[in-house]
Length: 246
Image 1 (tube, one colour):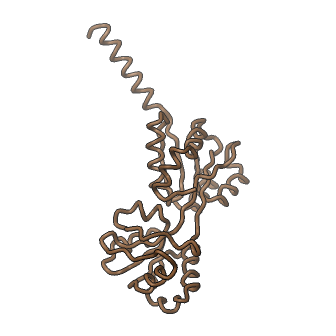
Image 2 (image 1 turned 30 degrees about the vertical axis):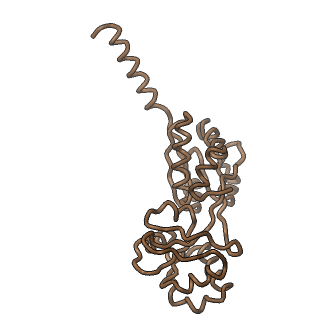
Image 3 (image 1 turned 180 degrees about the vertical axis):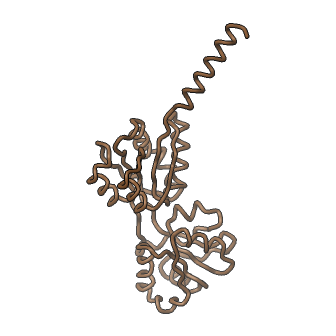
């Protein structure tokens, strides 16, 4: 091999090795953020940011993992869990920032004709017409159960209610062949190709999950840069298109 060609090959090998050695940022995020965070990370990398590994799980599970000693660079969870991590000295010396919030909506199988939820009356009518109403067995599902009470139809639809885990709701409705309506976070509905977002809950009954991002103790310096990117106009646009709004 000629000296110049040899030198070129060595430089290429060194650059490739440096790229591979670039540290990967580990991000722990609540499940409804997964679709939006994938888009944000793609934008971040296009802007020259470092590689990112995203792991998703419910906020309580991520909180428990971090308290148990798991390490990561950035966590994006609900504010109460951020505050708890701060008290446990799990955060770096930086303030948490609000990333956005996820509202709840109605979902139906993508192949079905969507119900109408233009106002409270059409919302109520569509719920009464459903063969099954599927919502989760967590606090947000308890909130929807109270919505049914406020609408005065809780007893009427009681026999048609199916309560499952959050992921179980999307699984069931996505595979349904009858007129089933599911309730879940809008980001998770729009991310699932098996589902059609019928619409958000009426404002009178809407509930939101707020998310904050924070750098964790011992995190890489670029963790703070990623958090700043998360609240940039470009990132907010990407998140809003996937159901995470301000």
